[in-house]
Image (cartoon, rainbow, N blue to C red; front, side, top):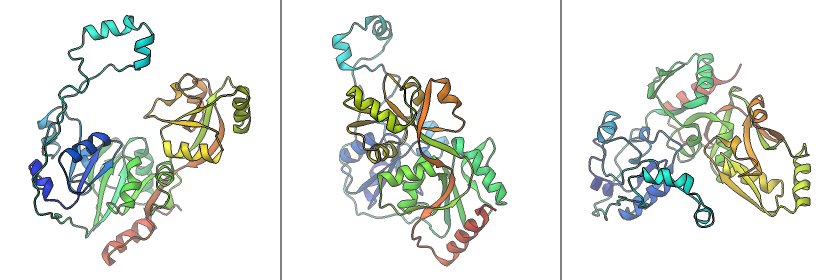
Length: 360
């Protein structure tokens, strides 16, 4: 509220920044609205935390307008009503009898029209472009939610730093730092390198896996590792079925070549990393399958290999899998811009954080 209270207000901005978990829908929205200039920021979640500092609007799922208002957001336009859908492979529907599964589900369905109710805005009126000024007299630090939060809280505690609203079992999106000229925001660790690269945030604490995924996708990115905080460590490995009579990646590739396997299917939560690995290991033909979790269930039916994180190896062993190659060991790290452009006051905060977080 106050930044863009109506959909038409977006046309006043010289560049419209859109954050969303639904990047393709965001692109369709921007094109339909005829936004002169826009940038879609794909995020892994918590998109509602991005405005106003890091986005002008978000495409987000919500139970209703009141839920958004309670979160401090202003609803501008409803694209569609969403619910759970049954999806199927078109070829399987034509060639297999799936009625025992689809029949009961379809009988209870309320709609069968794909894309039912999907709406896009018409062209917005062209207004004089402006960029609403955003204060940048403070240093901006991003810290993670999710499984990395515990490790970061420990690192902050060791550095004698405590953010009010960010601790064990406690997360608010904008915790109070207690440090003069330091603003803190809690976002998903996967999204941090891109925000550092574009200058939206100055420093971020994330996993090395997230940084390398970003750099494999954007090799010239200015986002770089500044400190290894030596916490939350795990191995990122190539994982295959334990039934394969091979113990190394070279043996696995030799086996698959001998079988005449035409395409190698690689499932990964880090698709750019998987692509880099496949090329570095000279896979002949391969297909990277981006996934969002539950990766252990993909091999062997839906993938030949996983690029998977392991701490003890217990989970993959329970799922009859085994690691056959180590890509790297990930750890929690502090990242920043390769050449930060900071004022003297912000530089003092920057240097203070680097000094405080330096592992002893």
